[in-house]
Image (cartoon, rainbow, N blue to C red; front, side):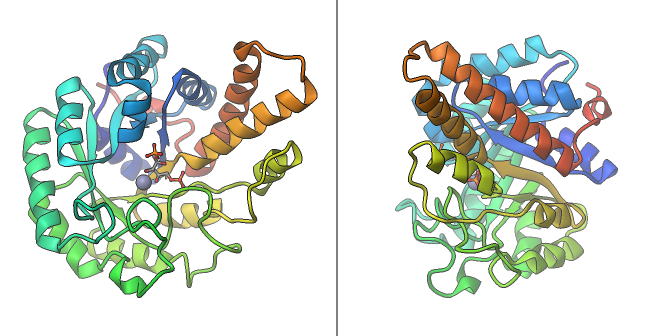
Length: 325
Ligand code: G3H
Ligand code: 13P
Ligand code: ZN
């Protein structure tokens, strides 16, 4: 099957009332794990590469690995998505053949100050014009997701400064024409999201419900949505790691979001935790081991298991056939 656009995939998800994981990739084993989980569950796939991933792997390596996935799994629809792109990263992704880009116009060039609304509209609109002319979808972002975006987490300062404003969301979507909108609701990137299992005072699901009421036809995106399973933290720490107590986004909250217009759920940290847990375990149990294939195989298998569970929980399992090109 030809690669598909994010728009096409999320339109199908909206029609079927399910969500689709946007899984971050940096190397071959992660791509293989995602694709095997998708094959096992018959799921549509969003493979997404951050600017850091493109730099780490080298653009061409990563892009061709993703194309290989498309050749090897012809029955699974796949979106190639640029995650958190600058203007230039989005343009190069479109030119390279990605089928979707996220323009992250929520911050100024210093990478930490929330950008003025008008600046965000301007750069997002520019990318929408460029991408749509070439048949590529665009995800925009309004509000600041903690971690990457504000550099110190949503808890610092006045949250209303960072959370997505529903009125502005309506204006942003109308003026930019984005295909999907990433909203800030209190999540942050990375492993340290919440100091205890989050309630709705810190994970503000009401914002999603409110935004969806005003924009019922816009596909919403939840970033920073790894669930940070306690068992993976225990596994890492049992085998020599030192991750401090922390909580992620509970799967049942994501499912609530899906009932209110969330169609794309971004997950990266959980893949990292699974790989690290499996590799740490391998080295403790088999100190004589030295063949990277042996420990990367374990890592790949655990990522696959975690993601197959997520694909079922998000509802995308069984829906690969919804998309026809
Ligand atoms: O958006 C955040 C993703 O987890 C990507 O992280 O920039 O370290 O590749 P990264
Ligand atoms: P996590 O750090 O929660 O996996 O979030 C990933 C993400 O939002 C990528 O854009
Ligand atoms: Zn993100």
